Structure formats: C-alpha cells, structure tokens
Image (cartoon, rainbow, N blue to C red; front, side, top):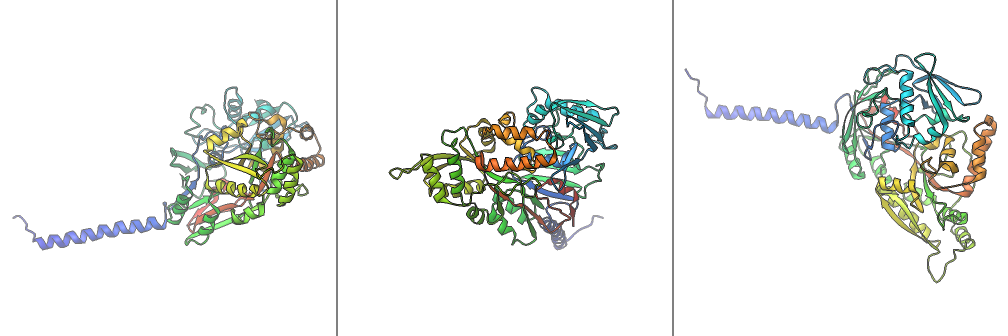
Length: 520
C-alpha cells in the first residue's frame, strides 16, 4: 500500500527543516563575527606585498617579517640589541676578529625534515655571496667575508674575514639559513628552521603558515597563521573591527586610526617606545644641498614637536641620532635642532639664498611613498619650509620606484623610516662610510667625510672603551653634517583582539613574538 501524505503535513515539515537550517547558518555566522578564525588559527595582516621569501635576498619590512617567522640565522638579537647565538649554540672570535667559529645546535631540523649541518650554513653563504646573485644583504658581507669553511666536525662552521671584523655576528643577523639545494625554490616556496613552516601564498592576498611541530625551541602555541596583505588603511581598520583579523604589529596605521581603535570594543591597543627612525634622506651631491648651511637650515625649519603632536598624534618621540636611545652607544650630547625659523633664515642668508622680490629662496623636491601618512608628513613639512622661504614640491611614488630612485641617487630629499638596521653601531659603516654608496651599501646620501671614514676604520681594531668614544664622535659629526635629518622614533603599535593573550611586544616590532601568542 502506497503511503499518502497530506499537503499541510508536508508544509509543516518543510518549515521545521528550513528553520533548523537557518538556525545553523545564523549560529555559524555569529561565530565567525566573534572570531575571524578557527580555535588554533591566528589571523594577522601586513600593509604591503611580499616580493620574495628568500632570506638571503629579502630587505624590505614585509619580507623581513616573513623571515622572522620562517627562518633562523646563526645569530639573533637580545633585548639589548646584541648578537647572541641562534642556530649556533655558541660562537667565538679569534683575537684579531678575522676568524669566527660557530658551533651549531644539534637536533635542529628544516621544515622538509632535513637535519641542519655546517654544509647548509656554507651553502647559504656561498650561494648568497656568489657573483651574479642579486641581494642588497650581500654587499657588506661580500666586502668582509673571505671564505666560509667546514670545521673539524659536521656541526662546526668557520667564517674567515678579509680584515678585522668585530661586527660580523651582527652583520649576519638577517641571513636566514636554508637547506642545501633549495636556491631555486626559496623565493616562492621557502624552507627554513623557524617556528612556522610555509603552506601557501596567494599573491597580493595572503600567506598561510603552519606551526612547525619540531621547532628546536618548542612548537608555537598558534597552530595556523594567516597573514592578509591589506595596503589600504581603512580596510585594515575595518578588518580588525569586524573581527576577521586578530593581530596587527606596526601595520602602518594612520595615527588618527590608532586613536579610533583605542576606543573600539573588543580590541586592545599597545603603544611602546619604538626603535625605528623616521628621517629625511639628503642628497649631499645636489648643487643646493651640498652646502651644509642649507641642510642645517632645513633642520631648524622643521617643527618636529608640532608634527609629532598634530600629525603623529603623539605616537612618536623626537630623534637626533640614527641610534635609538635604548642602544648603549647612543650619544645624547649632539647638535640638536629645536624649531627656530629665524635661525633657518639666517643660515640661508649666509648660504647666499636670500629672499628676492617675494620669490622663494630655493626650490626642492621631496619624494615619499604613496602611503597616506607619508603624504601628510610631507604636506606639513611643505608648509613649515614655506615659512622660511623654501618651496617644497612633493612627489608620491610607488614603493618600488621610490626605492630605485633612492638607490640610484635620483632625488634631492626623500622621506623614509629605517627599520631594524639602526639598532646596531654597524649602521654607521653601512650608511655613512664613503665606501658604502650603493650598490656597495646604504649610503644613499652619497655622504663622504674622510675623518669619519678614518674613525670607522679604527673601530675594526679599537678596544671597547675607544670604540665607545668613536661612536660618540661619529654621532656628533653626523649631527653637524646632516647627511640625514632625523625626525622621530615612531611608537611600536600593536592592535589585537581579546582572544589574543601572552603577547610580549618588542620595541622593534619583531614578529618573532607571534610564536608565544596564546588564543583564548
């Protein structure tokens, strides 16, 4: 007998099933609003695209953050910015600082299961320093390193330097060690020893990483890490507010946005005194800017305090040295340039740049990135310099074009923030030695001072006390010559949702802290 159903029964049954489905969908939707990721998944974001994952090449902040998650070097920085062992269990230097012996940790594995040995370290440096390998990181190392050799056992590697190089343990900090034979795959499919292993990369959208369960310091509390690439400030803010991003570390937020996020429900904002330094790069070969009186006039004409208050919304501190104040070699007794427009005018008069018939004393061009914050700083500076008779034209360039122009010396002034490299005294040699003009270093200002070169050469063999005195003298010299005009140290800004805990913020904004994060 064929069963029969009345229409009303079918209708009731349909409504019940539909209601249950809607309830399930609604519940899932609520869960996703409360939490933009799974229980063990952390979602972060970054403000720019990642050009390469290769730790021998990466130089910009986006790629370097990935390096901090995926790779380890022979050394790393401690809280005093000193180089300490990382993949190396220990390292020693010969009395003349020309030979370094690194004893590697035993039991360290790469993400592909291969065990770390001295062969991998030698392979990393040999391929990086080879002719034809393009890397901004290699320049200083190529100048210093004579050879990388295998030691007496598989876990010992020796680096021989051409001249005394007391700064080598610091110079190799940004070089992530890779396994033998992986040169071709590293740019897009990186393999390291770090706390997170690479899973996938959707170009210009997101990177997906997973906790490396065999990490030598113990696995991360975070099982899966997604890093969204979000160039737009408003979109970054929206992603945090709606809960689809859990954590942002120095994500280039507009200071007004930071103030707004401080009031947002479900979010916490931490501001820590930062170590990076915002500065004006000055082309000292330029016909106008080669006169130190003009450079000093510009520095007096810039009202740092006003810009920190009004543009940076007090999320920065004034800077008068390339080193952060927490660096032990920091010298506070340098020439400073409190806002003094009358002194600026006087110096311009002395330089033969008088006002005539209401015309500007001089015209200059400032190159900035397209980031809104850079444009705002440029506009504020434009108005301040106008008050002393300097006409400043602003040019906003895409990151790649800006970097190329700076490297090529195709600029008068540029606005940038130095990230990480200024935490060590090695920055003096790398950014101000006359031997470090690109492509041989980062002396983008084309600055040349024989006396300063002599002092920097002396640091290679000087005793510790003498080195401290030299670094003091170098900072005093730079504050007078102004190949760069230091502006401020931006605060390190971390924004995170309530589900994130055990986050120990580093002044530099280092992403290694992600390993210790816990998710509630």
